[in-house]
Amino acid sequence: MEATIGAGEFKARCLKLIDDVAATREPLVITKHGVAVAKLVPIPSETRLFGALKGSVRATDDIVSPLDNDWEATL
Figure 1: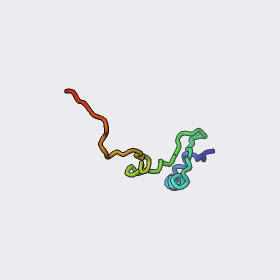
Figure 2: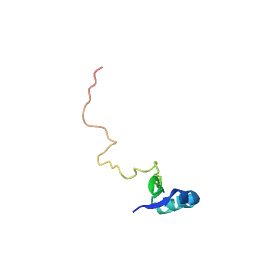
Figure 3: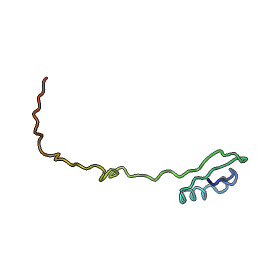
Figure 4: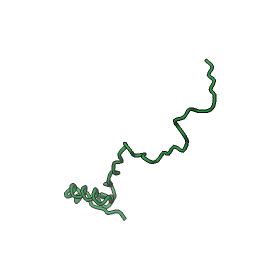
């Protein structure tokens, strides 16, 4: 079950609650008069683009040697 907090209390403790959500990675539902109006969620951790696919592609054939088949081209 998600933690909830009233909007007035959220306003008073906003910065601390943001730090708590970042640290625990648990969302926080903000209510107004008992009705959920917003949800504070942690952003996904950043994945570095450079090197993200390292080791995921493997060549099993010889990709350097010339091909054995003849090619014909018509213009």
